[in-house]
Image (cartoon, rainbow, N blue to C red; front, side, top):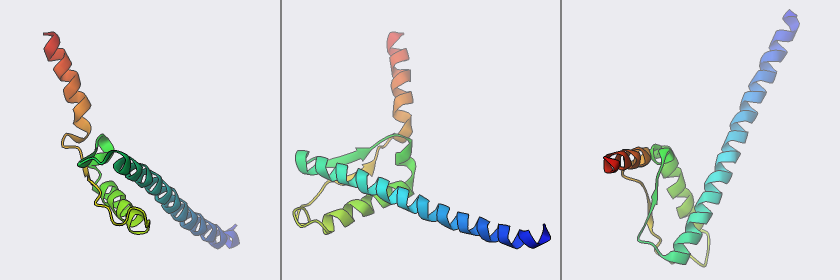
Length: 110
């Protein structure tokens, strides 16, 4: 058993490394797909601002990475790299909008 312990730690480190790679690939794909969809909406509707709501909007890393991916896609796409796209910002109320709306409905009912 004692001879197998170093092998176990080697396998464990390999799995941890693969987990980090898989995690990075999944998030890269997610940001890319989301950024592509947002850019398509921007080009189709020409909004002044794109507001991201919900709990995810409170995550500054998410917002930074999403904006970086949008900028990267725009810079590398000849048909839109000359356009001025709308800013993508977190919603002011972030995840509290639904709760505020629910309380408002209760107050309104009286």
